[in-house]
Length: 177
Ligand SMILES: Cc1cc2nc3c(=O)[nH]c(=O)nc-3n(C[C@H](O)[C@H](O)[C@H](O)COP(=O)(O)O)c2cc1C
Image (cartoon, rainbow, N blue to C red):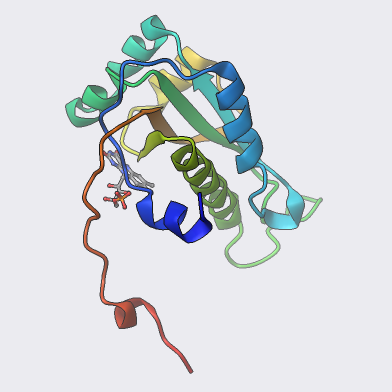
């Protein structure tokens, strides 16, 4: 897909076809996500891909109803975590700039967006989920203590074309000097 078309047609998709996502495609999407830029190429974002329906249903119990409705029918959920204290930090552990740990999450966001764009190119809809009980999901998925669980991304083949939520007027977000 042409780049701008891929950017412009990516939407948060919350309804999926009842069709599994092949492991080869999961590998391809994560490997595309690795093209994202990161702090000193530190690459601290981690993906835990869940396709097992029993585990997905257990995750649903740690979500508010509007998010469990999505995960209850998605064939793939990616738990995205980030290794802490590397991106934004010096080797001795001190923050490099005043923003410190923010770069960990900056990198994670860029990586997840790259994943979502690659998914769109393959006809896979995604929605990032930020509202969940992290403790329960961390335990279920055995996320290491050295990582923060940042978001979940529900994924599935889709034929849904969601309308684009309105964006702010351009000059609310752009200053040219
Ligand atoms: C960090 C983050 C957290 C989000 N959390 C949720 C969520 O918990 N549930 C949900 O349905 N959508 C969630 N979204 C999706 C946003 O609502 C969506 O991106 C926004 O409304 C713009 O719509 P679009 O993605 O279709 O352009 C989240 C998005 C981001 C980036």
